[in-house]
Image (cartoon, rainbow over all chains, first blue to last red; front, side, top):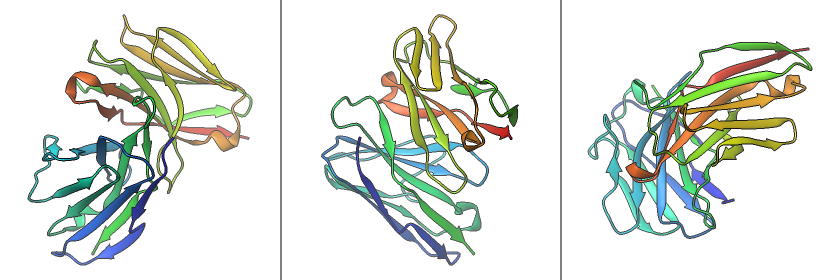
Length: 115
Length: 112
């Protein structure tokens, strides 16, 4: 498995501001995935972040709103820009198992409330 | 058609019964299938993975995969109140960059 640390774990943000979420992994991984879970909903993939290349965004998500950095094989950030109440969600970082590459593990999540 | 679909809940079973959770997926090329459990206020926790047709058992949990029917299920035997959670089916799409796509989740309630 992997140990995945996310910061912040929880925050209350003002409308119109931006917040950067950090994800630190205890092993080197090629892929990192960022998900959003809106209240009462399942997980939706925002983007896949590979080290050394631009993130690949899913339909409905754009780089201007959710810029992602991936400076090395153990770290990534997701910024939620110009936040509105609709961005109130759990944001989750996830990575494949470093050994098998099949199983995907999740961090504890960052719980954002936009007021 | 959604890529991963689960039967809608909530599902309520009495303590000690078998809970059956079902999931279908759209891509015949998918190779890896997962069940996650999510308690309220927590992040998803992996409980089962299955890669080959047939059954895979782990304690009270059995995952079943039928690739021909594009169907994966999770059975929970001797259900306990502590099993009450949302169960998320997820499929790894290797022909789409290896991304993991989730179904909408099934809320399970085990009544004492």
